[in-house]
Amino acid sequence: MHSIVIIGSLIGLGFSALYLIETIKGTVQPNKVTWLIWALAPLISAVAAFSSGVTWAALPVLGSGIGPLLIFIASFFNKTSYWEMTRFDLICGGFSIFSLVAWFLSKDANIAIVLSLTSDMLAALPTLIKGWKFPETENGWLYLGSVVSASASFTEINHWTFAEVAFPIYLILIGVVFCAVFEWRKYQLNHQLNKIKKS
Image (cartoon, rainbow, N blue to C red; front, side):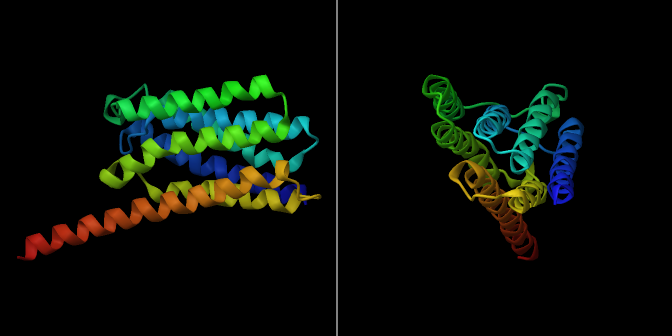
């Protein structure tokens, strides 16, 4: 059974690698606040899950933190992949960091996961808004990597505790939402553009 979660994690990292390549090429413009928190939150959640006894099921969560960390670093190497941060981005990032710091004060695994989920969702907002307004700066299909990776973790769940299922479920939902929103917006804007050209 471990092979399934390992394969799922590798697939997730593969999708992250594709996004990483597009970042380096400048074909996508990742929001630095989002990707930094997306690195920190899963890594903290994975550590909390490991500390509560979760083993293989937390592997995809760990992988979902490593990929964004590399993408965050890569976003500094190509000026065309730079996305200027707004006050809203910084506010979301600030609350996200506050949620992460609160975990260190709680020292409770379940509280840590709730706070890291909150942090992750706040960090996701700037990218969701950016992708809605400027869908050409994103590739929605590449977010499906987290869906595949997180789905694989369910093959290793034994007790179906909050620590085991919370972050994988969240990763599946956020991956589906981002893919659907970004690709639908691209279709919508292209359709409008074609109508203007025909008229």
